Length: 422
Ligand SMILES: Cc1cc2nc3c(=O)[nH]c(=O)nc-3n(C[C@H](O)[C@H](O)[C@H](O)COP(=O)(O)OP(=O)(O)OC[C@H]3O[C@@H](n4cnc5c(N)ncnc54)[C@H](O)[C@@H]3O)c2cc1C
Image (cartoon, rainbow, N blue to C red):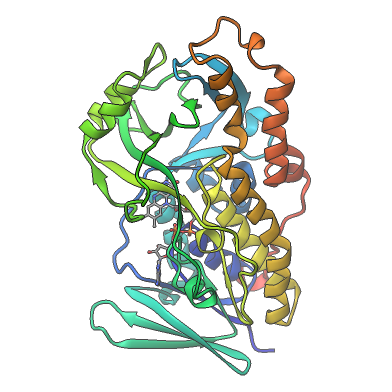
């Protein structure tokens, strides 16, 4: 029997994970990425244990351990840095796999290296997807060579749009869809070498719905310091967002004007801002959930399918899980149209639910409750919010997202390696 052939549009975290998964399952894959020479862009992201498990199954466990920082704890604090809630993460929380905080660009390169080793010339860069056509039992993708302007056409059994928040594949499936939905907040992010804060393995979130910071180390630097990722986020009066450009830079002064006083005994946020070489601005956006990701032999994955607000540190992890579930469907169901439908009807409702939950602050909702109940700080957190309330917020979210300890530790492996790929 002829092997199934798949075109993947986009070589980000989701597209590369999908390429590795399909290859592992013995399915032919060709990836098309618009950027000709990728560079390690972005700052920090988190890989939850569910996603780490999948990358370990892809043979990337050692590379991840070398590149990322195994986060052991999450602290939620108020805007004065007072501790509201502290919970173990990763192996410290009983998962069989760690949670890694990692530099996004380094993660992309780690995946890219494995993709190039495993599928070679079938990773094709500098080619921008323009449209698809479905002809009989095939789907044809059209790409524009960014250098020469010539058109490249490829044909396969299935085409997957893993082309991020501005997905052109999604636009063709949903031509009348409005642009990204702006939540009237801006995020400023950077990664900077700094002395470790707390134990060097803690992710801290402080503030409330309208103004907050997130900080966590993503790697040990050669200097002995930590490469520390930080994010400052705040509500703004603007009605329209600036363009969602991951590479847009802002001045330190703009960020210091809003966060210059956020200095806690355990974290000096103004110093981190001052020392950061580049600070990037991105609007807080997502998209309304759609009624389908799939059109015949074409479907979506990762941010193309479910761009979500970055709550619960999971966008990258969910893209990896999409890749594994889609590969599992394509391996188990011989008719590709039925396989894509299965992926869509099982995965989409869960991601649509998470996208909407994230709009109401997801697992970080406790911070807003504390701000409303104790805007001037507190002496004893028990007088402001009960342990039961705190735990139920955190647990309900983890279970809905499929990221809880029991699901991750006891679930079966999604993808079984074909003999040829091993
Ligand atoms: C440059 C960049 C920096 C980022 N930085 C951060 C960060 O610091 N923190 C964070 O939390 N998240 C960041 N993200 C988003 C994060 O990577 C995603 O939310 C998550 O990992 C899901 O990944 P994805 O593969 O679905 O999408 P993405 O990671 O966005 O990948 C999409 C890929 O598709 C390619 N592409 C787009 N259009 C086309 C086309 N027409 N034809 C071919 N290829 C196309 C893009 O170049 C990109 O490589 C960044 C994304 C990008 C692209």
